Length: 634
Image 1: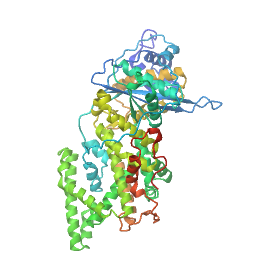
Image 2: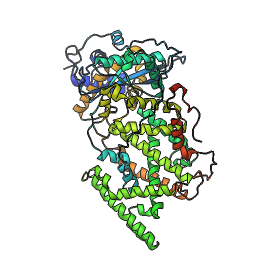
Image 3: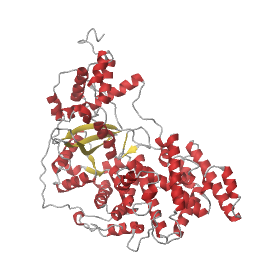
C-alpha cells in the first residue's frame, strides 16, 4: 500500500524498522537496501522522523512528586580525523537520571523542520566565569563524626570464601540471587545537550551548573550534580566563591563513586607494591594487565582478581589455623579418607570438626540459595560465628609478623572494597558514607592526596545535608543516590558510572556520534534530542518481533565457563600462596615471591596508622593549606 501511495501513507512497521536499524547501526546503505526490498522506510523518511523527534521529543513528566532527579556531567572527548589534526572535540556531556522512571508517550508529528531549529533548542547558554584569584576556599577540614557500625559484617562474603571450592558461586552472583529489599525502581536516563568547550575550563563548569540549576528548577526540584574528582574540585571552588543569593548555592555537589572506587583500587596497588601481590596476580593475568589493575584503570579485572585472591587467602588461613590440608576443602570423599588415614588422632579430630562445620555451612548455603531460608539467618549462625572468631584468633596470634600484618591489611582493604560495591548495588546511603570514611586513611597512606581532600570535603557536606537540605537528605537515605538500569534490587550503579555506560557508550559504539554521524553542533543536537523517541521506537519494535537486543538476566558469574575459570584461577592463587605463605613465623616484612626483606624504613604494614595520623594533622586547617603534601607509605 505504501508503494502504491507513498505520499499519503507511511506504514508504521516499515518506519519502525528503519528507525530501529538507523538507531543501532547508523548506516545509509543498510536502510536504502531494506527500502528497495520493501522492508523499511527510506533513509530520507527516517531522517525526517529523527528531526521531528528532536523537535518534539521532550516528554519528561512536569511533576516529579515521588521521583528524584539528579544530573551527571563528564567530559566527552573525540579525536576527529581531520586533515590538519586540529578541530578535535572536547566538550561536556550531561545526562539526567529520573528515578523511578517513566514511559515516553509523545506522538511525533510530521513537520518540515530545519537543522537551525534543532540547533536553537539544543543549545546551552554559555556564561563567562571571572575567577577572582585573590579569593580562597573558605572550607576547613572539620573532625568527622565517628560513623556507627550500622552495617553488619558481610556474612555472605565469609560464607562464600569459607566454602570455596565446595560451592563455586562468587560473592556478587550470590548477592544478586539472594539479596532483596525495597528500592526506588528502574531509572530513566535522559540525554541533555553538550557544551562545546574544554571541560576543565571554569566557564564550562560554571555554564554546566547554571544549566543544571535551570533544569532542576523547571521541575521544582533541588539540583543535584555529580562530577568526577578534577571537575568536582573546580565546581566546589566556584560554588564557594559565589554570593549567598546565587542559584548555584542550592546545588548539592556529589563526588562520583565509580572514580572513587578506581582511586581506592590504585591505593591498594600502591600500598601492596613490592609485597609479591603483583607476582601472584601475574600467575593468572598478563603483566601489562596487572600494571593497569594496580593503578585502578582496569576496574573489572582488578575487582575479580582481588576477590579471588581473598578466597585463596581465606582458605589458606583456615587450613593453617585448624592444621588441616587444603584437600579437606574439596568435595571429594575418597581423597579425604585417604588423607585422614595418614594423620595423628588430634589432627584427625581437627579435620573432622572442620569438615562437619563445612558440611553444616554447605547445607545453610543451599537452603539460602533455594530461598528456603532468609539471608538474615546467617547473623545468628553459630558455625559462621565460630569461623569468624577463629579468623580473629589467628590474626591476633600473628600480629607480630609484619608480612602477615600486611596481608591482613590487604584483606581488610578488599573487604572495604566489597562493602563499597554493596552500598552502591543496594542503594545503602549510610553504608556509602561509612565506607568512604574508612577509605580516607588508605588514600592518605597511598599518597592519593587529591581524592583524600575531595572525599573528606564531600563527607563533611553530605553529613550536613540533614541541616542544609533535608529534602535531598531524605531522598539519599531512601536509596536515590544510585540509579538502576535493571529493575532489580542488586543493580544500583554509581551515577558517574551510568554516564559512562549510557552516554559515552552510545556515543562511541556502532550507530553513535563518532561512527560517521559527525560532531557538528547540529548533528550533536539532532542525535541527542531524538534519542528518547528512537529508544521508544526501538523497544516497540523489539516487542513486535520478539527479538531483544539485550544481555541475559543471568549473572555472568553464574555461567558454567565462568565458574570453571574462577575455580581454576583461585586454585592457581592458592597453590602459589601455599608454597610462599604470608602467614609464616618470620617476623620480617618480605616479598613472598623474591624473599627480599624490608628494613625499618619500609612501613606499608602500618599504612592504616600512618593514614590516620596524616588525617589527624589536617583538622581545622584550610583545605588549600593541608599538611599531607608528600607523606605516604614506603
